[in-house]
Length: 199
Image (tube, rainbow, N blue to C red; front, side, top):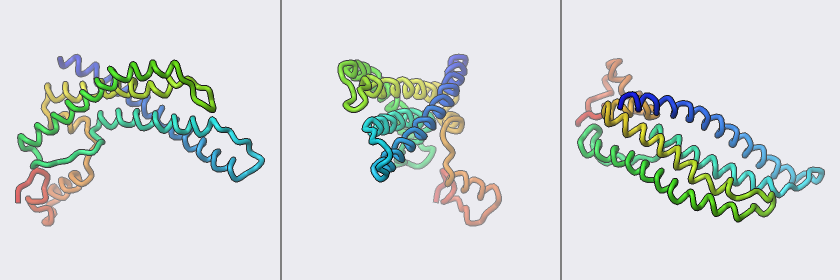
């Protein structure tokens, strides 16, 4: 089981790096296409390329879906903390959150496959690009979400929720600042303001 987690973590590290590069390329392309659209509307010497509007929209859709997958790995999505940190109810809701992400990944794969295949029969109006390249965003994003969610859940099963979040979650700047203040002996960091502290 530990070997499986190690292999999955290594695979996901490589996939995450590739996603970061792809997201940077998409963002760069998106900005260039938008700048060209604005410039071509105001400078008569530039030809009006209608496919740039489509491609910028497609790049934006891919950025959202792939960025969502990376957000799942590091729990960067919106989280509502309704219970005291570290309580059983809090741990349960955090586990449910990761299980819900896993379920979303499965749904995206199951229904995203048919949605992607429907794009084979459609083409973009201006560019003529097959819409399968756009409609497959759900399927591919679902695959990444599934892999990242499985890593989080497997890590939790083997090492516990706290260890998993320490290893994978994006650090919370507020919590880190409070912990640093406590270690420095700051009198303003009272027990009621410390993470998991009680008034």
